[in-house]
Length: 305
Image (cartoon, rainbow, N blue to C red; front, side, top):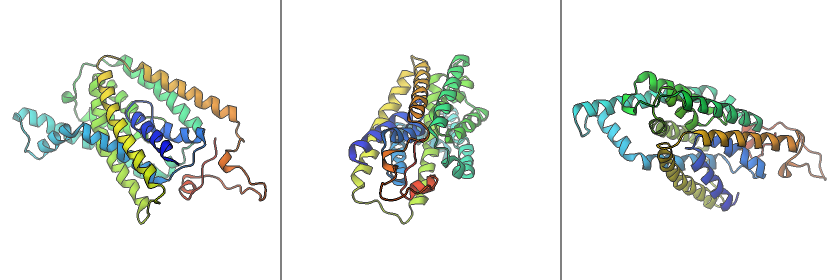
C-alpha cells in the first residue's frame, strides 16, 4: 500500500468513525472494491489510534473535568461536581457491555467479512437511525442522563462490533431513543468512544507483540495516522455543529445508497469472479484454501464476495 492509499484510508477512517455511516463497513469494503492489498494489523491499529487522538484532543477539557470530579478535586459547586462525577462513572459503566462482547465474540466477529452482510447492516441500521430521529422528543440534556440511559447506550454500542453497524450511528440512535437532543446524543456517543476505542486499540496490540513494522511501510503508516487524526478532529466538530440545526436523514440516505452500490458491485462481479491479486498463475495450479482473518494476517488477501 502506498502513501496516497494510506492517506485516503486514514481520511476515510477519520470521517466514517464519527459520522453515523460505519467506519468498519467502509474500511472492509473499499479495499476490496479497489483491489488493494491489506496492509496488516499494524495499519488497522494505527488508524484507530489516530481517531482516538482526535477524540482526546477535542474532548480534553471534558475528560479532565470528569476525571477531576471523580477524584473529588474539580472546580465548581458541589452540585456541579456531583453531576460530573456521576456522568464519569456512567460513561465507564456504559463501556462494559461492548468490552465483554469484544472479549467473548472476537473470533466470530472477525469472520464477518462479507460485503453483502455490510450492505445489510448499513441499510438496516440506517432505518433504525431514521426511526430514532423521528420518535425522539429530543428534550433531555446529557447532565440529566441516568444509569439506565448509560447502560442502554452501552448495550447498543456492543452491536457496533458487527461490520456496517456504525458505533456512532447505533449509540446516537440509542441516545435519541432515550430522548436526548441530537447534539447531546452525539456528545455522549463521542465521550463514550474514548475509553472503548482506546481499550480496543490497546487490546489489538497483543497481536503485534514482538513484531516490527517494515521500514518500507512506516511512511504509509504515519500518513494514515495523521490523516485519521486531522480529518477525525474536523469531523467531530462538523457533526456537533450540524446536529444543532439538522436531522440525520442525509446520513440515512447515504447508508442506503452505499448499501445499494455494494450489492450492485457484488452481483455485477459474480460470485466466482477472481480478484487480480489472487488469480491463479498459469504455470501452477491454484491452491483452493478458504480465506480467514487469520490467513489475512499471514499475508493472504480475501477474495471478493
